[in-house]
Structures are given as C-alpha cells and as structure tokens.
Image (cartoon, rainbow, N blue to C red; front, side, top):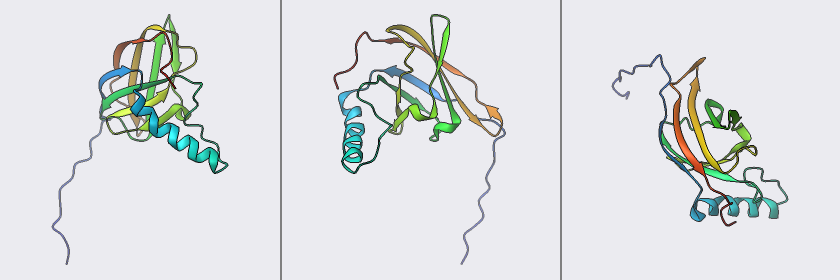
Length: 139
C-alpha cells in the first residue's frame, strides 16, 4: 500500500530568522549545560560547549536554522564586529539558543545581526539592539 502523493514546493530563498530578543541566560537555561559538563568531565571527556569562566547570551528567535553551520551571528560594538563561531553554539532549546559571547564584547549597547545561510544564499539579515550587562550571571 502506498500513500497518496503530496505536492511540495521547494523555495528558492533562505528564510530570515524572526528575532524576539537577546538577554543573559537564566539560571534554568544554564542548568542543562552545567549537568552535561559535569557528566562529561566525570566520564573523562571534555565539554567545550560550556565553560563556567565564559560569558553566555540567550537568543530568542524563530525560523533559526537548527544547524549552527547555517547561521551567522555578529555582535557589533564600538565600530568592531565580533562573530560567533560554530564552537560557540552551546545549547538549542527550540526558540532559544544559548551562545558564548565573543570575548571582545564589553558591557554596554551592542547590535546583533543574525542571518540564515543555505545553498549559496543568505537570508535577509535581522538586527536587534541589546544591552550587555555589567557582570556575569551567577554560575
């Protein structure tokens, strides 16, 4: 028995993410990272996804490619651009992504631009202004 054919359409464009906000991660958002790190270290493995000495940011967005290889995130501050690398993506929780903040970003205002990338094309870049807090969240 075969199912009925379903018509699909392949779009010739990369959809832009819908960016809702940028904030420091909540304690609840960091719990899974801490637990995975602890379990990995106990098993004798490294866990580069989370370093308690680094600073993290939560990005709330929809239509964000689930594969970090196909997402570009840039922080712009003081005329300098800081890119989030593949290894800086720490945790995907559906509409929230926890990423390591590039080390050059300082407390204060910042512009964040996110673009989906695919098939040799990029989506429309989406930009939001945010404020980086003075101190790290409690670890």
